[in-house]
Image 1 (cartoon, rainbow, N blue to C red):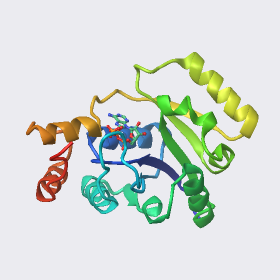
Image 2 (image 1 turned 120 degrees about the horizontal axis):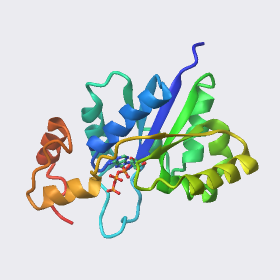
Image 3 (image 1 turned 180 degrees about the horizontal axis):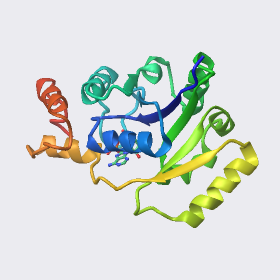
Length: 206
Ligand code: ATP
């Protein structure tokens, strides 16, 4: 069987935006990946902050629309199909079980990386994927990153790599806020995603 290098970009994707696409593209280049899977998280039963997260069906549909012109990108509903809480450790273990020949790269922002040591079953994360830390400039603190990396590898083994990308200042929060207040989201989400948001009347309320 042929070994593939596959990036995993996990997120709520509520909605998927140009920053997500950019990370996936930059990771492909920097890490010489064959594919990137957009791993859409399940819908929490509780509200996140003040707001209700959009349904998994809507978030999956928008992510499919956003990547349709990228042959190396795909969307997974693995976490959406799982009952209860979803943990990255379980997801990576499942992927590795299905396709043991592949090498998985968990794409993760520097901010989240600094907290990884506290993750649920971090040993399973380290055993089943290479951690690929996305450095977006502003949070660049190589000393801190090096010490977290050392602690992780000393305790659990595995591998950590990092790459730098030009930051793209956009978030799902900003897109939702713009939609709600009638602002322009051109360039922040694809036209198909914008049309989907309109059709389904998403993000009209806080
Ligand atoms: P929200 O604003 O609702 O918190 P978000 O824009 O951060 O959402 P998520 O779905 O939580 O979107 O993000 C999924 C992953 O993409 C996370 O690892 C996050 O760090 C990363 N990401 C989000 N926006 C950007 C961006 N502009 N540039 C690079 N990475 C990003």
